[in-house]
Each structure stands twice: as C-alpha cells, then as structure tokens.
Amino acid sequence: MAGERILVVDDDPDIRAVLVEYLGSHGYAVTAVEDGERMRAALTQALPHVVLLDVTLRGEDGLSLARYLREHYRVGIIMVTAAGDVIDRVLGLEMGADDYLAKPFDLRELRARLKSVLRRLGAVDAEPLAVGEAVPAGSAGTRAAIGRCRLDLRSQQLFDAGGKEVPITAMEFALLRAFVEHPNEVLTRDRLLTLTRNREWEPFDRSIDIRIARVRRKVEDDPENPKAIRTVRGTGYMFVPPAES
Image 1: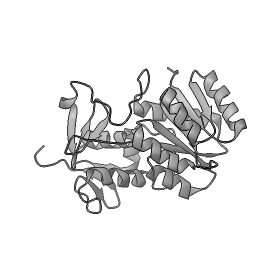
Image 2: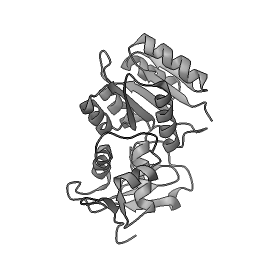
Image 3: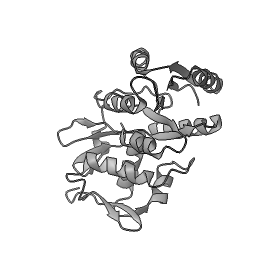
C-alpha cells in the first residue's frame, strides 16, 4: 500500500519534477526541495518515511545532510551518487544510508529500492519517529541483549546500557534482528541479504561488511576485537549472545 511520504533533495529541477510525477503516480506523497536549508524546513512540516538524497548538492553536500538526518531522525535514506563512484557509496553507508542509487537510474529500480527500504522500516501506515522519542509502552519484554546494548524488536530501537537510544538505520535494525534470531549460527553474506529481505538488488562488493562494521561500533565494547558479532573467516559472521542472557 502506497501513501508513504518521500522527500526528494536534489538541485536539478528536471529530476525533481520527474520524481514528483512518477512517484506521485504510484501513490506516494512526494515533496521535492533543492538544498539542505529547504530540507530542514520540510522536515518541520511533516517527517518523511524516506529521504532520497543527492550526494553532489550545491552548498551543503548530501553526505553532510545524511549525517544530520541520521543523528536527528529515524527515517530511511537512499543516497543518489554519480555512476561508478564507489567512494561516495561507501561514505554514504558509513554516514548511515540505507541504500544507494547511481545516476542515471531507472525509475522502476528506484521504486524497488524504495519498497525495500520501506519494508525494512515497517513504515506503512506508521508515523516516523524522531530519535529520542519515548519508547512505546509494553515493549520492554521484547528486548534482546547484543553486546553492550539491547535491541527492542517491537519498537525497532537500540539502547545502550544506560537506556539511551542509539540511532540505527532500517538496514542496521534488520541485520541486528537477523543475528538475534539466529544466535550461534554462522551466517554467510548471501544469507544475511536474504534474512534482511534485501534481495531486490545486488550490492557493490563488500557493502554488507561496511554495515556490519558500523553496527559493531555501536554494540561492541571493542569494535576492533568484537565479541558479540564475530567474523568467521572465509564464511561470514556469527552472533554470540552474552553469557548472562
């Protein structure tokens, strides 16, 4: 079911017009702006479910804006990069983007990526939550220990030992949930993509490793020597629950 809110941030007026028309014709509520200042203004009017964010904006660039979004809001982020620019894709994932799309892109592919991110967010008919918003009542019993944190499977939030929310992306939540639901089981990269329902596209080489490295920085006491999400050399990864759980 469409109706989800999409915010397009791109300084090309032709691209904005095409995306508003195309996504609007498929039932999405689309707002399009040209820069970071207008993006922030749009966020105060209505939080989108997904932000489609061009990397090479005039003024404040898309990578900086992605960092801002990830620090302040729980929304999906799809970065739009120049064709073949792997560095921007890596940096986008490091900043917390859920997915990327290279220009020029096919509109049908864009729609497939949107659907994938929205599914991981569980965003249909749900209001996006700003980071720091109160945890829904009755969710405490759904929390699973993972490293130094606890993952709330109901609210899709991650909390540190002091109960403070740790911002995570939709893909990061999907990865953590996959690990929690398959403890002490070696998961290949291919299996992780299947478990996170991210099979609409083939990622660039090792993108799953970048996301796991980012997750480790959030849940591990020592990300360089991980104890919770361990590397199984030549195979994949394995989640080892804390002994007390």
